Length: 320
Image (cartoon, rainbow, N blue to C red):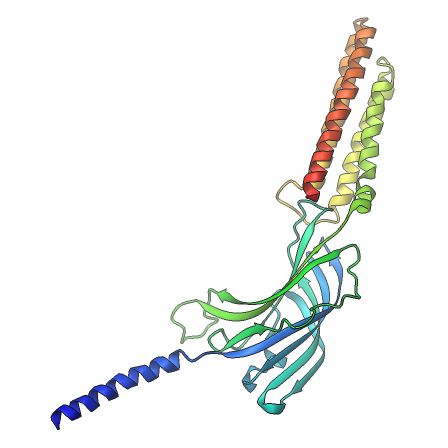
């Protein structure tokens, strides 16, 4: 009888922690989520933002999630719900809403205008962390309207996924012992690229014309110093002006971009023209006219070949 009592006590003590463990390991509720983008517009490189209109739908069982009030779009500068509908039939909640968002993002401009960008969109529930709620993407069908065109861009891929966002803070919750909270997130990544050949010439034609004007100096007689220096200095200011015009439409960058490289080598070669003209004038003053003409000819051909090769290399690297 004593053995039987001891056995019952052991079983009871063993079941209590198991029940607690099972409660702790209770699976979070699932929210099936999908989006359908109707338009992307007003891509602003200077302000690092773009606008997107989309439909968002969510299906879940826990009524407390209340996405109409607790929806969070972390990357959005602003967002508005122009339409929303909730259907609570069959023991589930189905929420459909139309969102208009101004999204903040960081652009990669190293290869501008032959750049490829990734537009990011994500949502979270501001009240329930990943222990209570997890997103599962609805991957059935398309995620954007194939009839809308993003002017000047091509949509290469559109991927939806679920993930976890960690916040190293307690958000002021006294029950949390360490500053670390994780929230489930639904994410969309849109990869876009553009064939910018026409845009490239529109932006850099002035720079190339200024270089060619300075290059003409080699075919002006070496003792005509006023014409040669006047053209070279004018070309120098024209190239600098062209760079400032392009930079005014781009965000600041801490690294050398394609725009910086092309303008940099153009300014350097205009400086080479001025230096070569100075040396030619010196030869003329020493009555070495034939040597000055020969120097101008070979310097012109060598400089033009190097300039073209550098441009071809930089543009090819940016495009590929």
